[in-house]
Image 1 (tube, one colour):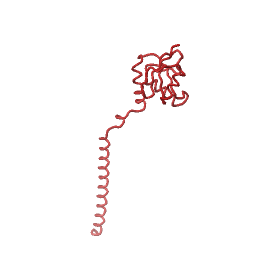
Image 2: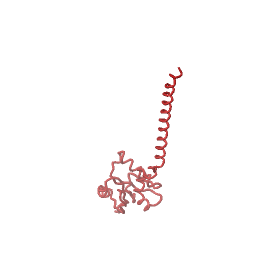
Image 3: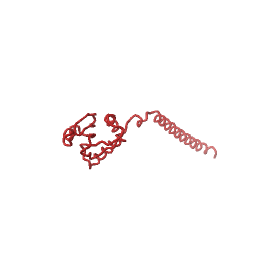
Image 4: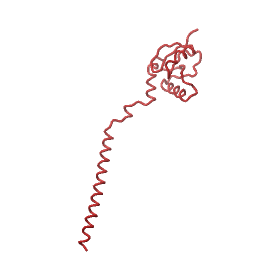
Length: 148
């Protein structure tokens, strides 16, 4: 009987060996993949998020304004739309601690223009009786109320 059981034991041992070798191979591949992931540069450390990019749009105008106070705000976006509201809140965030007033009171002398379409700026500035003091690019303008 022992002679007949020997082949069964060998077959059983070879299955165990193959299973162990397979598990070891999987563990080795998983460790290798983990090491490759760890060694890659972290993308969020190199890419700026949309809020940071928006803040950079306002860097130039912010340097030309008082550190505190109130500025008016005008935009080509519909103020009741999600995009218009988001743009206004992002401008407020970017210009803090300055307060962004919208709609700008008629006697507000300094107004920030935030335009998604730069071609719309001249018509809106004329309608609001504003003169362009400086165009900072990326749709950001420093405007001054015309004197009567």
